[in-house]
Structures are given as C-alpha cells and as structure tokens.
Length: 223
Image (cartoon, rainbow, N blue to C red; front, side, top):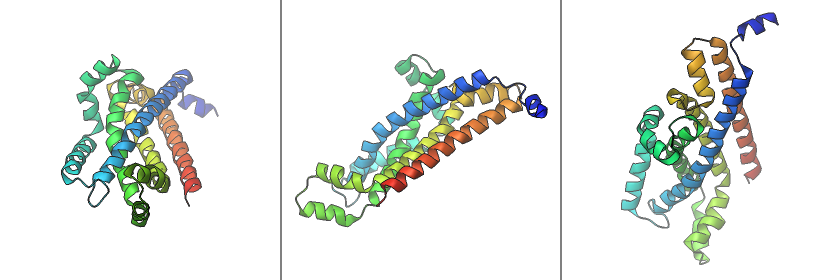
C-alpha cells in the first residue's frame, strides 16, 4: 500500500474533514431555507396556474417569468452578482455564511418549479371532491394536495439537495469554503491531483447518501 501513501502525499486529512463539515453546513443551511421559501412559492405557482383554485393569469405570468429568470442565471455569475447583497446580509462574501444567500437564491426557484410540477400530478378528482364537500382552499392545500404530493415533494427535495451540492462546489471559485474551495486551491491552482481526487470522492459519497436516503423516503411515503 506504499504506492497509495505516495499518491496521497499532499492530502491533509484535517483540512479534508473541515472542508467536508463546511460543505455539509452550507448544504444544510441552504436546503432548509430553500425548502422554507420554495415550498410556498411552488404551491402559489400551482394555485395561480391555469384552471386552478386561484386562477390568475397575470400573477402567474409575472411570477413564472421571475422564476425562469433566476433559474436561467449560471450559478457562478449569480455568486459574483450577489456579493454586495451577501455582504449586506451576512457581513462577508467568503466562507459558509457568504455562500448560503447565493445558494438559496439559486435553489429556491428550482425547487419551487419542481413543487409546482409535483402538485400538477395530483389527481384532479381529489380537488373536485374536496370542493364538492365544501373544503376551503387552505384545507384543500394542506389536507389533500400536499399529502397526495408528498412522494413528489420528497423527490423534489432530493433532486434540489444534490443540485445544491454541486453549487457548494462552485462556490469555491469565490472563496466559498468547503470541498469545492479545497479542490480549486490545491487540486487546480497547485495541481495536486491527490487532493482533487479525494474531494471528488467525498462529494460523490455525499450525493450517494442523499440519493439513497431520498429514494427510501419516497418509497416509504408512496401509496
């Protein structure tokens, strides 16, 4: 195994561990805020959509356009453009705190659109039956739509979390910290391939854990 030790000669496991914790912190913070903001936005997009409970073509068109604009901005450009906003909110544009606002802005419209799609897949007959029984819009949303769409919502959260992992890696371009920052500073700028390989492996492990956990939750909640 000497060849293995020789290959990983530049790897500092303490830094790898610290970078992994930073990546998980960015993921946890940004995913929590993304779900908190994206879920109600996705529900509203669904309700304002054509032939839905709060059918409002103008409102839907404006909000849909805003969501599409935010989704179309490459994340690296969004990171740079949001530096003044990030500094105003967190006091810094570096590290975990400096990355979370951009991650949330990138993830929220993405997650909201997935939620809208998941709600559209709910059987229309459930809504009609709820209306026939005199249910209010709020009751239909919380007691029917969200419950029926739960597997789709969990799948959307899984897809979003994996996308956020890739965004955390890109945040390293502007000193965002985490495994991405380590890969850029050591793997790319210093051409230390062993560090690059380790960061890739750790990112793959995080993605695999998220994917397998999400799939299990979806299967458990499906009916």
